[in-house]
Image 1 (cartoon, rainbow, N blue to C red):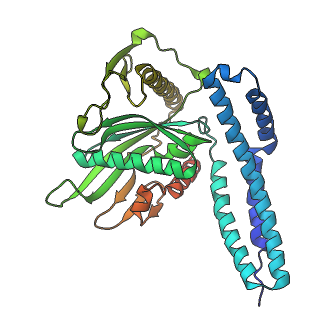
Image 2 (image 1 turned 180 degrees about the horizontal axis):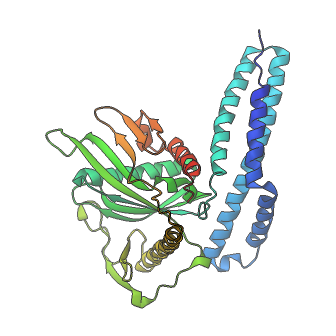
Image 3 (image 1 turned 120 degrees about the vertical axis):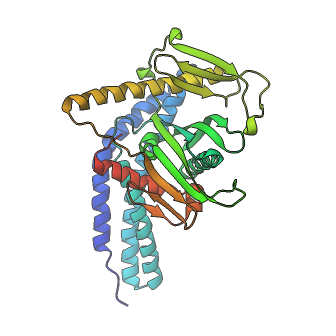
Amino acid sequence: MAAPDFSAEISALRATLASITSVIDPEALRARIEELSEQAAAPDLWDDAARAQQVTQALSQAQGEHNRLERMTRRIDDLEVLVELATESDDAATFAEAEQEFASLRDDMKTLEVRTLMTGEWDARDALVTIRAGAGGVDAADFADMLLRMYLRWAEKSGFAAKVLDTSYAEEAGLKSATFEVSGAYAFGTVGVEAGTHRLVRISPFDNQGRRQTSFAAVEVIPVIEDTEHIEVPDSDIKVDVFRSSGPGGQSVNTTDSAVRITHLPTGIVVSMQNEKSQIQNRAAAMRVLQSRLLLKRREEEAARKKELAGDIKASWGDQMRSYVLHPYQMVKDLRTEHESSNPQAVFDGDLDSFLEAGVRWRASAGNAT
């Protein structure tokens, strides 16, 4: 049989990996791992639990990134050996195995390559995501609930940790809003492309006449601030309200006033937290989200002033960024990247990676780094 020639493909894989490696800088990565390892080995590390968690999480992320690079190098080497064996034995089954591994490597390389495009100031951070029901009544509230489930499923599948911080339920069904934190390497760089208005078109399950309904939900994504960027918020600038946590349909799920709502009086920013067990924990979580939003607001104002001085003010994101159509046809389409899927159910079940990768590439090519 005529032996397939994989030499050009393997060379292309090595060239792509070399480009990725030059961006990630393994030497600097190893130095960071060594530094974090020393910090993690300190006997007094856990005297400050929050600091200890930051160090161990950063170490795990750095080690994971380094291991991915090394594993990719080994896989290309193994593929080359596999091709040599197949050529020597002229074995169709081994060639088929090599073709399968090459396809897998190519896909994984594309995913790794996306990481090199995350060069924004906050891309390496964890992310805070807030979903709010928009126009569309009960269908919009249900859509917000569907999006929350979608992102939590995606996080679980993709190895990110996701923690729901607050949920505000609508009276009939679904959610008025929900806030959750995504933790992991380059969480903000990854999910930041989800910010914008999402649209759902379907036959409404809440309409007894079976009419088609269009509903909207807004997704906000902000980076989690670091301790060094702590913004002082005077007590005189905030109003704190406590109330009982509520569940679906407005039912009380807590007999004590443990939920917390903080209003930042100068800006009007409101943050509510009710998913922790105690009022103290909810207040601490709410303050952390408030500080992140205040930091982002300050940075955005600074950027706006710079653009105004330069005479070039442009919106980075359009209002509507993705449509989920369930009727009269099945389609999920990103309106910025043109990426689409004909399987909405898979997308709602967390199959988001291709949309996220397309979004990151679009952001980089458009010069809209986060």
